[in-house]
Image 1: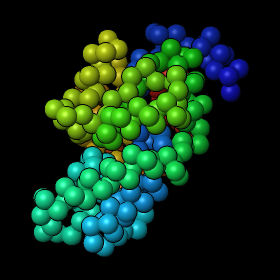
Image 2 (image 1 turned 135 degrees about the horizontal axis):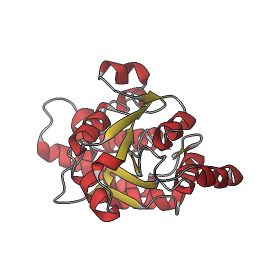
Image 3 (image 1 turned 135 degrees about the vertical axis):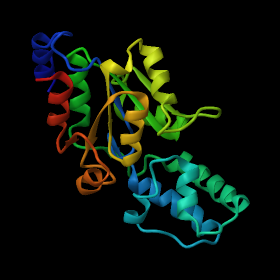
Length: 233
């Protein structure tokens, strides 16, 4: 793969590329985190005396940050005070177990290498806590991202454009030269709010049918398809 990446770099110039910056969602896009998220959610629910959920249920709870995950996972009518206890239990567990079963989707590492060899900047924008985002980037993609931004106090989460704008400012690349890659309806909204084009991936937490129902403009089934769109091969 390294030799192929070098060949791409020789063939693609800035003027040929459709985009100068590829901004990736994390959960369900570059990392399959659903088992660890489910385990952490169920640990917290069980610890606080609430019913647990299946993986397929939790995959539709995630995407809008931990607070929204816990709101969706707890029974309707649960008080905010009780939900705060569940969130705290979730964070205590997940801070230790965020990478027990997590791993990159097939081809993601090679995709990032090829993009960078072609001169495309890469970034991660996620509603996960910022410390978890940075830890997971180092663990699985060390040196493959130019910027990584997660949820921080005082900053709006996706689908608000704030985190994308932070990346644009840091890398000096505007939304017109960027594309946002994700796997959910939240990511569709994020791309549009940030003023970027969108690529949705079918291998993530929502799937192709769901994305089509939510008016995704561009859906890819493979990392090769994502690469070809970004560099306008």
